[in-house]
Structure formats: C-alpha cells, structure tokens
Length: 439
Ligand SMILES: Nc1ncnc2c1ncn2[C@@H]1O[C@H](COP(=O)(O)OP(=O)(O)OP(=O)(O)O)[C@@H](O)[C@H]1O
Ligand SMILES: [Mg+2]
Image (cartoon, rainbow, N blue to C red; front, side, top):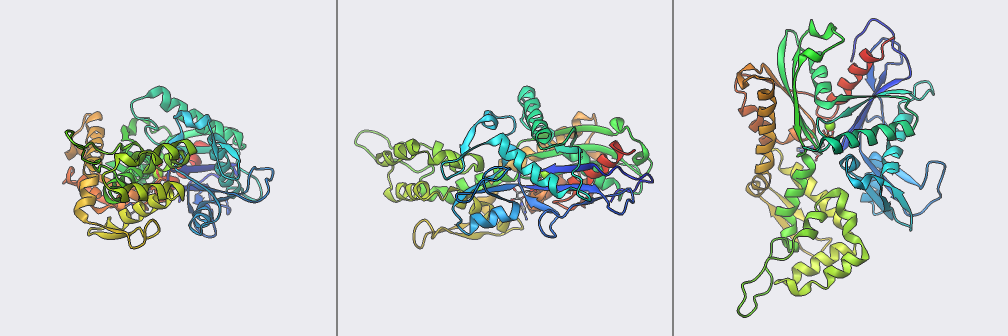
C-alpha cells in the first residue's frame, strides 16, 4: 500500500468508521514502512458498522453481550432475540448521542457507549503483536451535519471522545474523500486534478485534489486540496426513498382516508412511515405509547388492510426487516431493471414489483443533488468541469450505475476511474497516518 523508506511506529492505525461499513489500516508487520488493511472478521478487511445486543447472556467487563459486524447481521437475520444497531455514525451531531436506548431484556445503553464499544472492537483487531494502537487517524465526512457548523463540530468531538474512551491517546482526523484521493494518487503517473466522488451510506463527499508522482513527496498537501464539499444524502437515503415508494405504500403511506359525507378524503398521516424507513429511528416506532396511538388511528385509513399491515410491522417489530428488504431491492436494481420484493412475512402472499422506473423516480432528486454537489465542488475551486482531468469513484453507492453515469455526464473530458468501493478510504487514511506519524 504505502511505500516509505522509514520504518513506522507500531502503535499507529487508521480507521474508516463508515455509516454502513468500516475498515482499519495498520503498519505492515514486516516493517516495510507500508500500511495494510486488517482482517476484521475472518479474512474480511471490511465489516458492517453494526452491533447486535443479545437479549440473553451475561454482562462482561465490556458491557452487555454483543456481536459485531457480519456476526451482528447474522444474529439479526437468524431471528436471535435482541436488538440490531446500525447507522451509528448518523447519530453523531444529534441529541440522540447522549440518550439511552433500550437494547432489549430491560437493558439500556447510551448511544455514545455503543459507538465506543464498536471502536473498541476495531482497536483490538488492530493490535500488532498484542500492542493496541495509541495513535489514530479517523476519517470524517466533509460535513457530518449539513449547514450547521456547531453540530458538525459536536459530531467530530463526540467521535474523538469515543476514540479516547477506548484508549486512543492521539486522535487525528482526515476528510474521507481526501483519503480516497491519496489512494488514487498511487496510480497517477502524471500530475492531474482528480475529482473524488465518495458516495457511501450516509454522505456523498467530493474533493478536488491535485495529485501526481511529484506531489506525493510533499508532507504538507494543503495547496493541493483545491476544494472539499459534500451533502448528507447517500445510500441510506436511497434505501429510505425506495422503501417509501416501493414498499410502504402497501402499508398506507400516501394512502387516502375514508370518504366522509361533505368532506374531501384526507391523506393518512405520514410521520410513522418516515421514521419506519429511517434505520436509526425504527426503534422509536415501537414505544408502547406510539403503538397504542397508531392502533387507534384505524379510522384514518380508507383501506383497512393498510392499517392491519402497519400494525403487524409494529407489533412484530419488523421495521428493520423492511428496511433490509428495501436495501436489497436497491442493490438488485442498481445495475438496471426491476425486481420483486417478497413481503410474505407481513401477510401471506404479499409482494410488490419494484420497477426500474419507480426506483429511478424515487431517487431522481437525490441523484441530482449529489451531482450538483460535485459541480459545486469544482466551482468552489474557481474551476470549470473542463479542468477536471480524472474522476475517481469510490464508496458502495457508486455501484448504482445511473448515479455514476449522471455524475460522469458533467465531466465529458475526464478519465473515469473506479477505486475499490469499500477499501479506498481506509487505504488512503492509512497512507495519511503513515506520513503523519512517521518517526
Ligand atoms: N451494488 C450496489 N449498488 C448500489 N449501492 C450499493 C451497492 N452495494 C452497496 N451499496 C450501498 O453502499 C452503501 C455503503 O457504502 P460504503 O460502505 O462506502 O458506505 P460507508 O463508508 O459506510 O458510509 P459513509 O462513508 O457515508 O459514512 C450502502 O448504502 C449500500 O446499500
Ligand atoms: Mg465511506
């Protein structure tokens, strides 16, 4: 990965703490001066940012019994009794971070501690020769929170506090798309301006960076970072919009109430559907008070089946399952075409066809806003699309064909390069850590 002539200290690491997936880089054990990605679960060097709290089992020194990553997803999918937490990064910068949430079995855990527990798992996996790292470069999106510098700063401070709480003494940050540019730079044979598009689960980040074989030798790269910008719209928003347009209509989203004499029918209140389609809010839908209120809302529904299905989701706690199906459907249509979504777990025989047209319609405005953020990045550097030599795509959501094509259409003269969608940022953060912490 990195090549540097000097040996690296052994107590350093880099963490790409993603909304959906995380990865960690550490110095190569052979002492070559390069960084490598750490196997986090078996041989896998990336791992879902997920924690599953088991309803049963004893607390240990680290807290309630838990599983991480793929094991967390598997426990959840197998129907193990417990609670799955995902999208923890989305909580940074919100008031939820200091709140306690019920993780089943009558136990409460603070979101901040949940996040720290996940970082602790990563830190243990990063231990070289049994020594856990003390210094870390953490990636961060360009904006944790859009257009709110105070909350954005609070988000970074919370992430830094969680890192310190698990034993990192020196905590540094680097922007995720700049890290991806450093990864791209390893293959750049001449100086060029690259626009990095890192479209992940929570954020779509762009950086316009000057890269090249001569540039890479400089430690201070501030002059090469021409612009940095992003929006808080990415894969989890796609999931939400697919779920609303493709699935939740069968549950009453945007359905009409019963016709009453002399009054036009009214739309069913939609708040519950937005929360059900948002990973980190799903659990708030199950509070006994909310379930009771919704049970009493039967008269607002023109079609009793919609209400019945909604109540089944709430009473059987199937919200995460629906969100999961929406994500699977999104990935199924990401290369083009439509798919069928089986909802038999809610009601025997229920299924919906998700056409490419519906999917594209649901995501159109997200896609346009992401592409606009790319153009804004170039404008912020005082440049035009013709000044962009290369486009570097990374992040899981660049697997969405239409999205990548839409972004590329704005830069007809640029070379298009696809990075490792899930590892580029961690690789680049590792390069940055190796330069920053080099002896
Ligand atoms: N083939 C695919 N097509 C479209 N989207 C995909 C595909 N594969 C994965 N995704 C989506 O990619 C997203 C995860 O990407 P990634 O791992 O880069 O995000 P992240 O780094 O965790 O998030 P962020 O950087 O925003 O914090 C998820 O929303 C996932 O559904
Ligand atoms: Mg990412």
